[in-house]
Image (tube, rainbow, N blue to C red; front, side, top):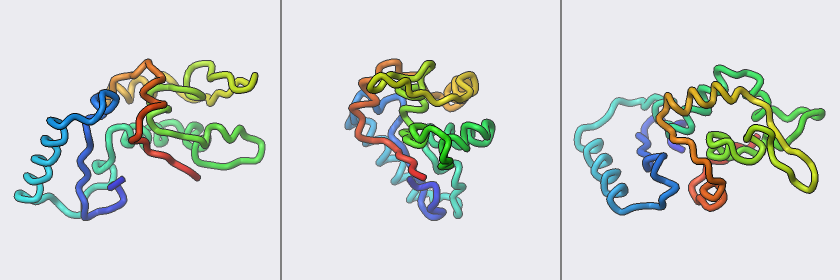
Length: 149
């Protein structure tokens, strides 16, 4: 969550490795990267978009390219399903729960949020995000980014 802070450079644990748990070697790599940035410096202000993790960059680009999706996940409207405002970025990126094709059933109700799945697949490829098919990672991860409007 460093994107709004122009004097901090964000470093992120590799997105495709998070579901395997936190590994010492990866943390050491991040510490070395941080020390290199400290010694060599970096340009200020830091670009907000570049300071996002890959899933955050994907989300921003999804909003830029699919205005209906962006409205669905950011605006409260009385006649609209509020389940689409209940947004964990990882759940959206990996199409879990209301983001999967056909949605999911909760107490006999189908909960689904429409969006351009083809665009999401293209953006996952662009940002190098491997698609996790197992819902277990989504339920067990402790490193989620929540957007609340």
